[in-house]
Image (cartoon, rainbow, N blue to C red; front, side, top):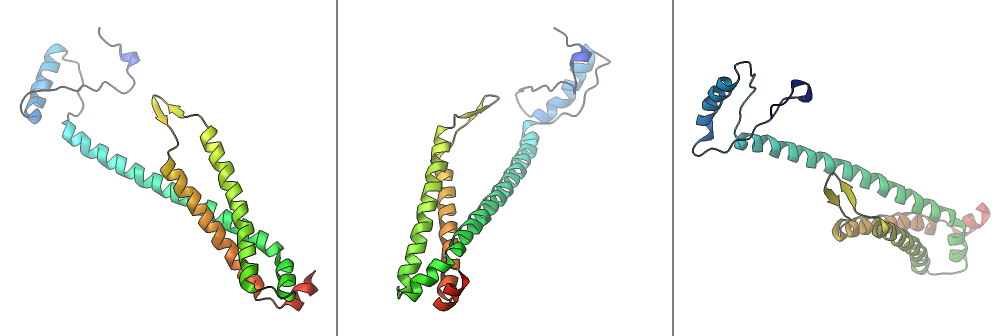
Length: 186
């Protein structure tokens, strides 16, 4: 059945399998097409090998772009977790000073702060995992996207690591405060 010109927006692509060298068939294809319809405009003809090269480049560029977006999102999330954990520890600065003034060993104070931060991070990871597990698979035009364990575990570990490092910095800074200074702040 012939196609109507109004139904064709960008032309028609034709894929033909031929025995032998496909490059030699292109002139023959043009001759056959113009014999059928002399008004037919035929665009460029290429072998699948040439198309694969372009497709490979397109996929490579797309993956590089996706990787950059993923890394920037991961960096922004890490910065947010770092800021939140730093804020939490900074708010407890007076408590750190009081504990130090009462003679608590600095290592014990540090582990107490990191333990509290680890509990908060564990709750955040647990809630995030529950949400990811509860989400149904995403279906995009026949392509089903499901959450896999590897990337989820990687992101969770990175966030926990960043959060714990974020708690260590302000806690150590708080331990350097003289106890009398911390008591005067409150």
